[in-house]
Image (tube, rainbow, N blue to C red; front, side):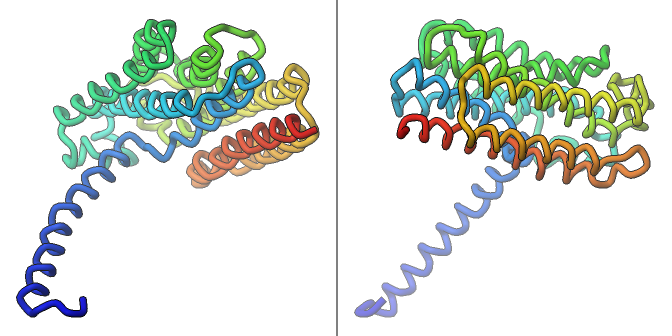
Length: 313
């Protein structure tokens, strides 16, 4: 600032004020869209896709460009599917005390703007898939239909939690196919682990809306079987997740680092199940976001370190 005249300082300050005037609303708008699609929840599936990418390097040379397109594809699918879900559920969300302050019911984002987000995000996913190969481009269309289909499942079946798990479990499988240009039954274990893991904690999450879902005539495992049985089903699914995680150790011939990772994940799954009881659902948000975020990231870190050590030994 030394050597500037008073008039130059005034112009500089005015420019900064105008820049802030433009950027602050833009930043807030981006954050609002991020909250609508729960972008932070990408941490659940993305580490599984990255874990698949790490394992695929045994059969495919790693290309940085491939990783970029996979990340963009994940962002596109996540944004498109969540945006579509928020649009289809807007009428239900406005009547639910837990969800009535979501961006569309609260009027912070219009339905038209949400549709634009869905269309642009879908285009990003399709384009990114195309950059990963012809087979990925062709597969991108049914994948989008499967993801969009989830938004309607709770209107007619209590299997909606498993459908959600299946839809999200396509991430590691799709990543493997994109990078190796082929299919392997081995990577299905990672997809099954993700499917049962997602379905298990989605059942816990649905327990919060038991009364609202009953009133609205919606289907869920807590509605159909009751909260206590729903928690047992969630526990059983997480046991299956743990088994799949362990089988990955055998099928991919992993080392001690990954085995220790699986043991820690098992403890975290037990903690998650213990946090929620039929008489106290107040800790569902802790089990849902915090513990599951740790599990997903821990899995990726464990697989990455284990694979790096394999290369060094």
